[in-house]
Length: 272
Image (cartoon, rainbow, N blue to C red; front, side):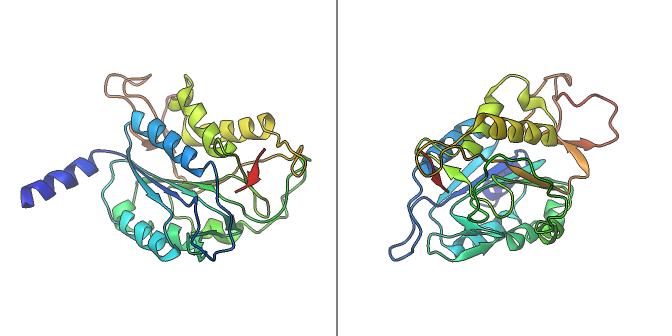
């Protein structure tokens, strides 16, 4: 039994991990609508990330307390270079909702990963949830004076990137075929060249694709747009999806490398 447990731990240390938390159906009595398309996102993410070497765990329709317990546990488990988490639910600024309708504070989840076990590991969070009731008309605005993200930025551990489907105060779109944010993320990873991009470059490409390719349809949301938002405290270049042996010799690039490295880093909808 001890040898089996040791073998399991060593196996986890040798792989990058992804945890997918999706709430599609809320408990009876909770005044939050079902999220058609959330299961489609989960299946697409599982297929895409597994092919890239991630060990993927799926958790569906957890309560608020269960989400807290899960992330506390995950923050203490071994990982090779990169831990990726996807949170998909209804939400508001600073939180997502569990299946029981209880808010899960994102800053608390992030803080769990500020520990010795996760030190020098890349932590990436993708959040598919509304951050308010606003709808984006696609008008360019100067948001330099918006400080709503500042407190959450301070709660993000070092070597962590958080990609939100939408800026503070705005809604995120969900379609029965999946969310534009997470489906576009998976599409990019399937296209040649994108997997070997440094993480912030990949996220910039994701923002551009969603912002300029998506436009909602239907009487209620016609013409509305979506613009993903990145918060990062990365101190290293991160290549979490790089293909082994691609542009870096037979061994392939590791998930993280220091910033001063010499080589060029090539490497009808509803509201969610």
